[in-house]
Image (cartoon, rainbow, N blue to C red; front, side):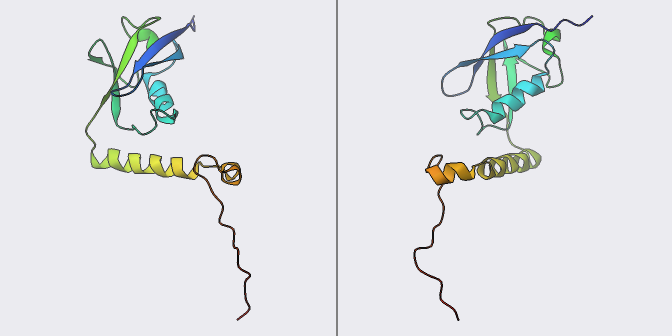
Amino acid sequence: MLHDVGFTITIKPPTGESFEIQVSSLELVQEIHQLLMDREDTSHRTCFSLYLDDVKLDNFAELKTIPGLKEGCVLHIKENPYTVREARIHIRHVRDLLKSLDDVDAYSGTELGYLYIRTTPLTAV
């Protein structure tokens, strides 16, 4: 029988402040990786690995199978060199982030959104 245990871990990026996230023992490391790519403060990183006590974590490992991973542990983000494939993934990710700006943001002027409003009338040719 599988037991799903939730616990809190700390993420330490290469720069910036550490932060805590809630995880499930049945999650894969890859799910944390994706969560970090979706977070506003870490979304600019796409080519990285997660480390626990200087040991690189396998992206396809379930958290419950990682020795020493428990409540309060600190996972470190370490950036990896970009390959051509990783660079393409990064560009696609940045494009997705740019497309995600909502029209509501443009109407309210938040998130650097704006609407182009024509101030001169159109003339017939």
